[in-house]
Image (tube, rainbow, N blue to C red):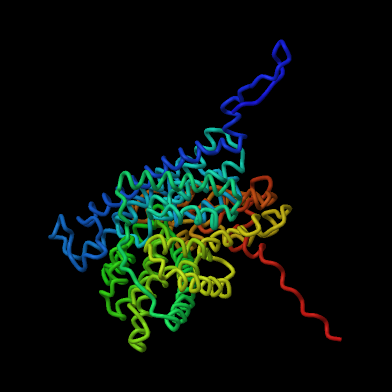
Length: 594
């Protein structure tokens, strides 16, 4: 913090102190205390988040972790019987649904894509309200049976804390992005008790850069968060996995085959996740705050069939690798986890997909190992070793983050004996993932918004306007229409709302399915829809598409109304599909025949 000046009476060069704020913002070493502070804050937040999940699970089930309990009733209220698992996601959804919809829609989903988007498009700026809302919503979702992980939420929570620190200190954009990565790294480190995996996750997926200065700051935050987590929770690993030793060269080849198979499974999980989310978007016509509760009935039905899918499910993962399940059950758990996690996200739940990917890889890999061991018992070891390979393979196939996949499995097991087949299997599974899908499980969500995370910009030229991509609006409804006519119109629309106009064709607002349903249920009230019309965010046809994207991303319905430049007429309807269609490169014409 010293500089030099020649301002002394005798002309001697005297040291001059650099102001602390300037040193903090501009010096190459100024990032160190901030990174350490972020690591402390995220470490404490990670511990608090785990306690929140345990508390919510105790409240909803009477157990600290219900996934390995089997078909038993509520531990505190036995009279409920096992059927309580069907209603638990509904009750949880009634609480966290309004919490997310009204306070922080960004907290919906699995978290990591939102952090990647903030770094790529917003200079690392994340709203300060995210940590609290994401913590409560994810804890309620997981504790209430949501088959998602805690890693995605803590990454978003940690990144938001890093971004908040940068905003308070008025740091520049590069340093804000770096502190976001520090928070993400610290979250992974404290949650997994894995100080090595945290930095590689942040550098490989969030920053997508391995610059020396960035790596040093991210490592400091990771180590600090791990120390805080170990001080409060103990030094024991959160997963207890047996040790394995490969039998030789033939089994190395079998491990590579298992990696390829689970890489394929990881890609399949990514595609199923977004397919089910699209189906849920298409099917739901009510208010977004109610969506998790109604969809919770479907999730509860899945849990009634396979209670092992309740919550994160780490005890089930351990049992699978330890060889306590049959091959049939392992396959059922793999397919069921894909469905349950996708459904949890699709209905508007809040939780990560990192842990479910590990779960799917573990049970799928163990099933492959059991089949291989049955065919070649003398040349292969325990099927559980294939479960470890499967965890890394599925993760690499879904995320295409091979360094993170290798490091985290090595750090969780501490088994150096599997490092060579692990690296080979991950390399193959990463190649399979790249061959079968241009997007990862994280970047697909951004691609659907028109964001190319690889090149760091949107898939469109900056001159594109809303009018260039907008689709035709739904059929309008006159404000004097009866409730019965409105109900019929709502049944025909695919966007969950009907635009309403007056005698002159001037746009007045929208009529939602919830408003008309409430009016029809009461049986009294307005005879026309005029009093039921509500306003919602709109975009103008001449607005730049980039300016319209935040409105579209936060829209509760499927798309937003587009109005004319004078604000009077309905000019169209903008959806994410329109943006993606505009983002796609035009098909090339075949060469002319000569």
